[in-house]
Image (cartoon, rainbow, N blue to C red; front, side):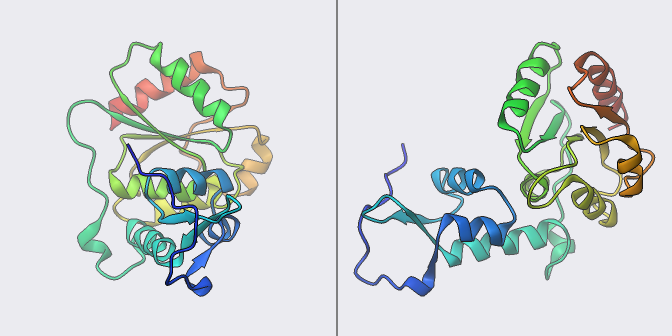
Amino acid sequence: MKEPLPAQRTPDYNAADYCSTKEAAAVLGVSHRTVQLWVENGTLQAWRTAGGHRRITYESVNRLVDGRRIAIGGGPGAAATAPAPATPGKPRVLVVDDDPLILRLYELQMAGWGMDMELIKAQNGFEALIRIGERRPDLLVSDLNMPGMDGFRMIRTLREDVGTAGMNMIVVSGLDRGTIKAMGLPADIPVFPKPVPFSELRTAVENGLVRA
C-alpha cells in the first residue's frame, strides 16, 4: 500500500525544483491523467500542496525523459540498453489509444478471445515507447490520432530504430485512408477503421502473433 502524498511543503522546499502536473504533461508529451497515474504508481515523485495540488520534482521528470531517450535509441549507451526481446511463452500485445473507454473495450473483447496473451496498454505514443523500452511486445495495435506523440510519429520512431524496426504492427484509426496514406504510414501495416471491427481484428492479431 502506497503512502499518501504529504499535504504540506517540506522545510527545504524550492519552487524551482518542482512543476505542476500540467507542466509535467507538456514536457513529457502525455495527458494530464497519465501524469496523475504516474504519480500514483510512483513513476514520478510528487507531494500535495495544502490546496490539494500536486507538485512534481523536475528530477523525476528528467529521469523519465532520459529513460525515453534510451528506450528509442537516442541517448548515450542506447545500444547496450535496447528493449529486451519478447520472451518465449505468453505473447505480449501492446494496445495504444488515448480513449480509456476504448482501451477498456479492447481489454474486455480480447479477454473473450480465449488467447493466452498478456495485454499491455498505453494512452499515447510516448507512453507506448516507454512500455516498449521496458520490454518489447510481440505485437503493437495502435490508434494514430492521439495527443502528445501521435501514432505516426511513434511508428516512425520505431521503424527508424534497429531494435524495433521489425516489430509487428496493426493500426486501428478513425482517419480516412487518404489522410493515413498522405501522412506516410508504411504500406505494410494493416489498417482497420473505427468503431473497432473486433471479429476482423482478431484474425489480424492471430496472424501477427504467428509472425512474431
